[in-house]
Length: 103
Image (cartoon, rainbow, N blue to C red; front, top):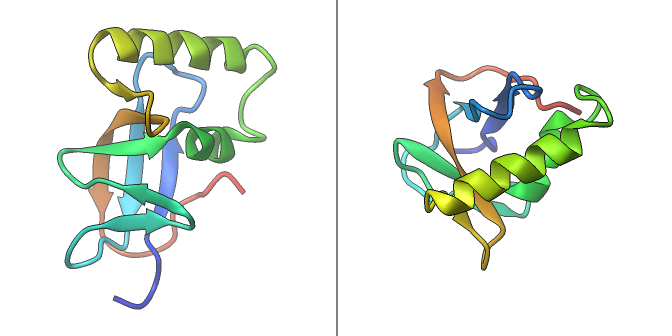
């Protein structure tokens, strides 16, 4: 697998439904996005820094408060790893091609 997978944050303004599109899935884990290691399952453990990067320019100023509320809820459900700073998101896998990266 030569190319790095691409990611898209679906509906970045909807912090009640956290979904990430993954394109260009490598044959075997681990999947990485730059310096961010991700765990592949039915869900991805996505660094909050990457969520912010993917949402940049696509959300308004109140989004940070919404994201913090989402993280709090995720933590109460066991979907946030505070040691790694990752949050569990539903993974939508799609064949190769470029996904919108929010950049």
